[in-house]
Image (cartoon, rainbow, N blue to C red; front, side, top):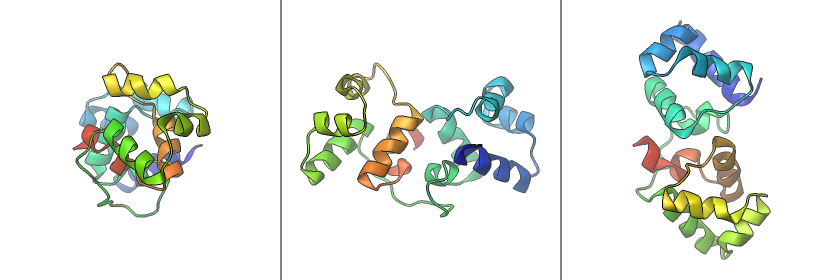
Length: 143
């Protein structure tokens, strides 16, 4: 079980909810929610946002990156603008960042054009690299 699965199961137990009840309450299919447990997958951004809003917890907590339930680490920039800001602060290039994280630099430009949303494993890697919360990185998707 990955950290997300463990945290989600803990929240289900704490709130005495079944997977079916949660899927209905947040408006996703039971198969999708169940797949997160059976296939060792991370949720898409929109689903992670729904789950964190439902339980009123941070996505960082939900993904097991912190034990702090709530997170006030937010900003009003888009995901790509946040990365640009962090890259500038760290004095590196987008290309260097993507190479360091073993991601193709075309990913960033697809995200920037809105052609793709980043996968949760990419977001987690970027958050760890810059030592920021997931909520800070993807605030535009969760506000």
